[in-house]
Image (cartoon, rainbow, N blue to C red):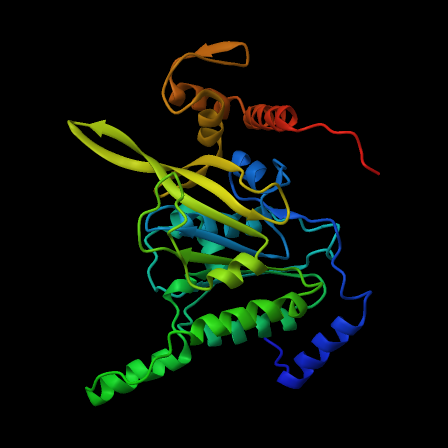
Length: 362
């Protein structure tokens, strides 16, 4: 992708004009979404099923500890954008070109991406590694400013916590070169820059079909109670400027036994929306993430409707006692839409029945 470079003065000028113009500075009220890969998670994120998910044109934060499905969920979003993006959105121009950038800060990718999502997807994604928060900020800003009408950008940062500030990195490298202790303290440099970057992003990205997914890594394991003691880099800025903050925790390992050996083949992930500007906050959802496959929407739907364990399950006027047999029946008879509809109906029935009804005040 060719990136048009704009000077700092031009960016500042555009931001100032946007602030002073009450017409151009107002966001459109309608929000569109990017499919997360799981119907029940879409509902938790946005209150919508097939058309729901991650907020399009906004900033999204996915938080979790190691092996909780953060990277897999981001990859799933990227693959869904590549293969199934709504190219005729209501709030943006018709999409003619899709850009997907994966900033793999940690430099590790344990998933067989070509096997999971295809060579076409793998080759279409721009895989980069930017180690400092300032360099990332400049890179993302240039890309957003360069977006033309009809161009869509999904930019994923994995993870913000793995980034250093330029000051920290320079000090570290200088100390290594001289074989001397590091001098000075730059612990707040990253935090200060994050606040400035996310604050300016509200004006820089206005009107652009650009979505930023920021992955945050916490060092301690998050249990399903989602304790408040866990922190991630850019905490206050991410809490304030993001439109969705989705916390992940491993609820259960999915295991199979063969020839006396039991091994995990996936996990059930519990997701909790601690913050949402585009849906109802504090909604929770559980979804199945399978190794070497990704998010399994059908299995996630079965678990939501019938529970995690095998038991008597009625579907399509038939009875099943095994999840795998029900799964096979659904896929063989192409009844995916039917079970997704059942998930949506159950979710909405709960929402309708917990709603507190009051007379209108005005």
